[in-house]
Image (cartoon, rainbow, N blue to C red):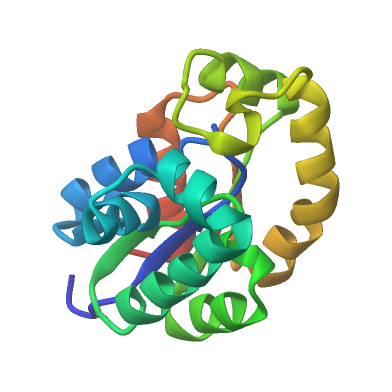
Length: 172
């Protein structure tokens, strides 16, 4: 890649940000980061524990700091947490420092992809995960769209097809 450009993946949990991001970075010979993984590395604890100890507000402050630092790099692919766009500062940094790709998916796909994942504190203990995901979508989808340079649906497509679409739309 002649020009080292950042690609930031946003979207709801279960959209495929980490899976797609990892493979996209490999294909483009860029460094890959996952903001949740980076928070876990820095705290020495998993996301659920951080949520339990510090609440969502404490977690979001950590997330904002990680995104601020990671977006200062060049030539990276960053998979963000689903709620990272709640921070205006994070939205501004993502928009200003790279190409933002919104990975869209349906509630049904989110449920299927996250049903056995106990590492997602917002739905892990929920009595009605569908309702939680619907409420999150209502609160967040407009924010994803607001900062997206590119929108790609991940529902019925293979990871390879999604990656090819991103590369084509980004113009790499």
